Length: 290
Image (cartoon, rainbow, N blue to C red; front, top):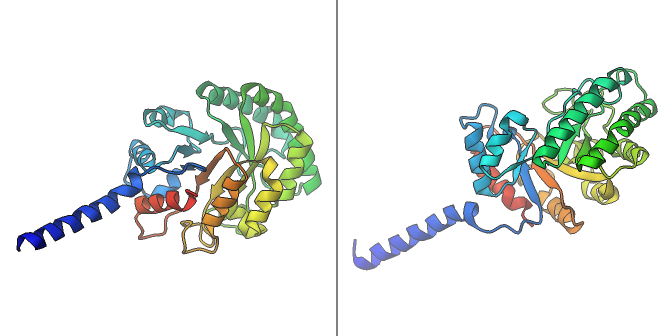
């Protein structure tokens, strides 16, 4: 190989290396603060949670959703936060609409609010639960009654209680929540208005809303004052948020950013089998960085 060919090859290799290194290192616009969940590393990840946190920080994520107190020191080690604390006192089946559980739920919520406040973590997730014969109006009354009992503590501590909207279309718990009472935005919005607290809002799960109602960006605009947090995933399949699915997530991100959203958008997708989870996470950050 002559000198000219060698230098050309060297330059090409350097350029390729620069492209490979750029996604993790380049500055982000940061208009949307992005978080993720363990799900995004695959169903049987080889990485430890410490490894996941290191990679998340390298790629530009600010934290993880649904990590409990045992994992909080690991988050802190990597400069990350718990962007949404997991539900305590409720389950997907037995949620806020079960009056017989209200005393136990209230006690658990108070404890979790205190834990999050001590770490300055912003949000806790909660759910309405399955109807099992409870009507939508009755469910609103039960839900609002409980939230009215805990809202002052959340306000005092600066923690937002986020009620998640889900889809009831799909029965497989991997894709939906059969018989869920909070499966339409209007239901949760009515609950939030009845409680009338800046610390009780909706978790707008874009995947679930697309399945149940569609018109995602119009719904974001309509309900924006009542939204504290977003989840993402692709439709169909709950996979990556790229061009392989029906939503234009870059347009969704632009909508959220243009509204001045100051909370977090957490990615809850399941990686497509055969794809590199880390490459998908890198691409996800770029899609939402508007």
